[in-house]
Length: 370
Image (cartoon, rainbow, N blue to C red):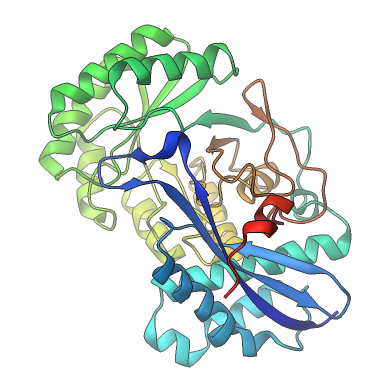
């Protein structure tokens, strides 16, 4: 099997209720810029990054994938994924202009597409190719009900719906309001509505200064919060270490880290307790696996962030021993041929060959090809 062509693809999918907001961002669509890798055998592998649906930036990502990385892949066997990842990762002209950012997002999309091809060629879902088991319990927690722009009544009602009607036993609430009292009011109301047995996570999306994070963090134990996610500046290891030493609630982070080395530094410093790598921010599945192995060696749970809208990460959770919990956001549900399936608050192991990134007929009909 040989690679013959890389085709750029950009998907823009609408988010929940026409728009959502956290402490730092407000969006109406989720972007999935990526590539389709064609082969002489007729197999096609799909891989996407995840963005805030900004077309000029999305074009930069796919142009980097096709024009900068593409010539290095033509004629190669796509099943030699790790060797190809190393070849692309170390390519001097690209490495010179960016070890993270756009070049890394482009490499991530390519790596996902290569693993998708490898699994399809083997006739297996990716989780099985990686040695996983369909009998493994992978619990879903819902992130799509706690947005900061929702009024308190909507927040509480939607969290109750997720638990009572859809079977989730864990939900995430956004924090980082201009006034601490507002965050506390929202958490108190959700905890009272859901009772003591449903797990609640919080996420500040890097908004808070260290003093603000300490002040809010010290109150989270009052509501039995599972973790405090991205409490302060994304790359500040020392601030997270100091926070971890100050508050009772564990810290979760990782969606904004590009490199396995960055995870190493946070883990070694004791600045993170729940490790949240994302294949669309790291350079794909290959680097994700490095991070998951690292976290596992420190006895830390891996709970991926789902910039891929959980399509690839569900496979990784069924395969890697450090993963048993995964967030769920449905924004690409109608855009994927085989969307992730949840039943009674648990993921159902995918059966289709590949990594779950093949676009649906709806997506192909509206796809933005450059």
